Length: 200
Image (cartoon, rainbow, N blue to C red; front, side):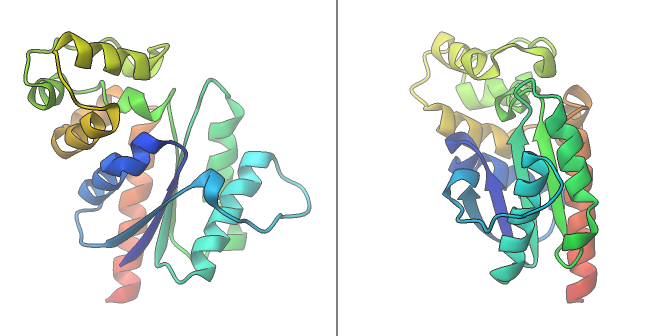
């Protein structure tokens, strides 16, 4: 399976998102990873909001370049319309040829890194207490940086997220980030099953 992952930030690009997707899928795949802002996308004329159109553009880009499937993840950033727009794009019939998993991290991807205190303890090499509800944390990136600094770790956030993604309990992540990660992971599993069926 040849899979294109498209996301917004450098921390996702550092391998954390790819690792989470690979673990959720449970099957082998070859991954390419692009930043949304780096894509040269053909504008879509007609009805539809900005995020809906951008998601459709990403699907068509992946399809055009021969990928078997595509993952798109953006941050919610307290913009309520994003989740609705991307859900609409997930179900849109214009791009049904390519299997995809489109998701919105609540409030940001960084929040997912706060879900599992055992993974944080392992990655940082020092005890970390259970964190408050990740999806209501005002600045999850700042909180991750504070935990790292409190543990006297020299890891960059990109390195920390990459380590965490290897060890985080996926069931706990789905439980504690039920508005963002749970539906995203369900779409990733559905996408993987669809591609496996096509390739078998």
